[in-house]
Image 1 (spheres, one colour):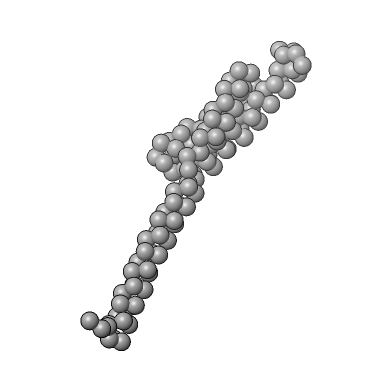
Image 2 (spheres, one colour):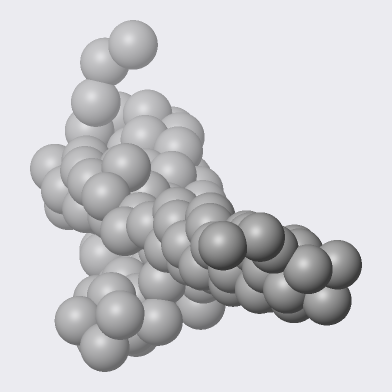
Length: 121
């Protein structure tokens, strides 16, 4: 059986369509993988915020710097809820705010305690 010119061009078209489909599947898989990596769980931010709040509690920041400490706790609670809802980008913002405010409250509390004579250098 000899292939005619029409059959050869038909098989080339089918081959190019198959290659295009394979390329499309590959492209979809690669983009899905990249998107899933872009919003990974913010475990580091979560731990850093939690530890910053724990450090602030150790120096009685709720007593000496209640404004910053309250903001830190509120941001941390909101960040936790967003984390549980898997809204990781929003959670990172809140957890970073919690860490910032907790560190500010800890520093303020330490300074005020030193001025009051409650803590040594």
